[in-house]
Image 1 (cartoon, one colour):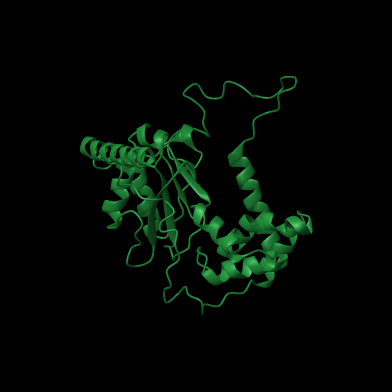
Image 2 (image 1 turned 90 degrees about the vertical axis):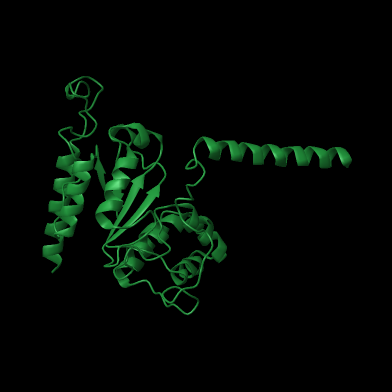
Amino acid sequence: LALISSFGESIIWLMKSSTSLLRRFNPKILSRGFSAGIVQHRHTELNNLETKFEFNAESKKEIDRVLNKYPPQYKKSATIPLLYIAQEQEGSDNWITLAAMNKIAELLEVPPMNVYEVSTFYTMFNREPVGKYHIQLCGTTPCMVAGCGKDSIKKVIMDELGIKDGETTEDGMFTLQEVECLGACVNAPMIQVNNKEFYEHLTEESMKKLLDTWKSGGTPKEGNQNHVKTCEGPMGKTSLKGGEPGFPEFLDLDKVIAEKKEADAKKASESS
């Protein structure tokens, strides 16, 4: 027992010493919090046990489509899709209440804790109100070192909006949140807005231009904010040009997005 106690004390001392040295070397190195925010629920006026939530007809139709993918005994696998449906539902304003999570647990026939665990793990789920433009800034290694670096982009956002990481502007227009890797490392630094639009190859100037566009009510061009198309290098496309046996042509993502938007608009006009 004495040996175990002595070993435990040594480990604690080592951890404390390491932390002290790290802070002395770079005070910021341990100051970064979890990108998902506080994982515990805190009752608020907008989000408590009395808050009401119901899925609308459109969401219920989408839920049925999702659940049909899974055998009944494995429908808990639909936790992530249903959380996303709840967050995207009209009137939800891009965040999920405790009542919505409880409703999902009821539909999936699982303990509510199973849903809470998922919603607190992924930064794509907002458990508190966010601004109309929820800016998620990638803060991992490629975005730290590529181009002007994420710290410069973050400074522009904070200076222009007058907020810090995790805060929302007083008019409810913008929320800033630094998150983990968003999977666009080759086009770093970058941000994601409202879990949908990527804005990549950012500079201080292009980031300010994006903010000015949103402030004026405009819609900026998605994707790369410079001359580069997708992730092509300075030589342009050098492979997957099409016509080569066994190698299909690389998708023109701009064309795919434009065609989808056109199809959605046509569908909307026909239904109305």
